[in-house]
Length: 330
Image (cartoon, rainbow, N blue to C red; front, side, top):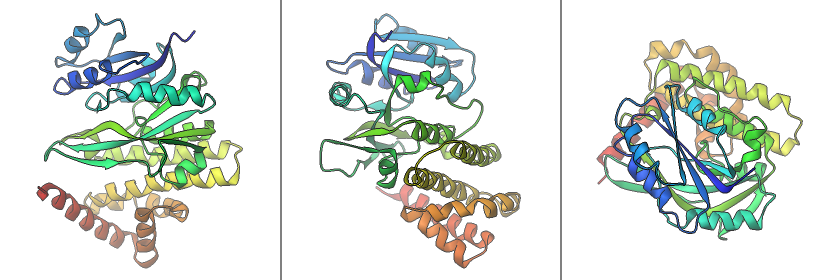
């Protein structure tokens, strides 16, 4: 039986520097009906102590478990969900607006058949203390659409955060794959396949922290291998579903975004390491035929002109140039 409107899940591992800001950003929400699940995933720093500091608040539930990774922590929390809707908040991120939950609740009460509410975010670049806003390009405070439209119009992002979803979707088996990096990919594909109606909110209250050394910033052999497996898994899942052509094509467009991210990651590796992935690159570049963004269109054009090795060399140079330019920006 649902006792609150929102369940907010925060997986936590060694983030003592950022955790209090994250927790306070939830507890400061005005006129909000929520429970906050803090999942201490075997932290070895003071994160566990910080969680317990806030455990006296009746809205806070602290869960301690052995370290199992981000996906495992989120899945662990699913068993404790008491809300009608669920949202994920990374422990080094935070919510800027004090009325975010209150406003979101009103929208979802007015549109009870919506499966997911999508909102924008702000990237916070820690090294230069600067923000970049990613706001859904809509004129209204909010609008409704299908998942196919949400992907086509680039409202649907490749992350678990940035979305509020019905808890019943989780109860029906929507889980994260344990032990892999970039785990949000398969989850986002599964969510799109299982959902129908989307609400898009013109809001960028979620602050997505970009910190040096973050796992999302590091390219490793495991990350590359996991991305490849995620792409294969996503395609298998898509083929199992009987959905209309428009929705299927847009979900493949979403997968093409993931493939282009993979190509960028590969481009930062040594030429010798790149060769080990040539077969995968060649086999799955066909995903780019579903391109609907500038990045995928450019990469597709490069593949049409050059061989894979040259494409990777060009993209690697562009990526490193843009990274240097960002670091040097005031």
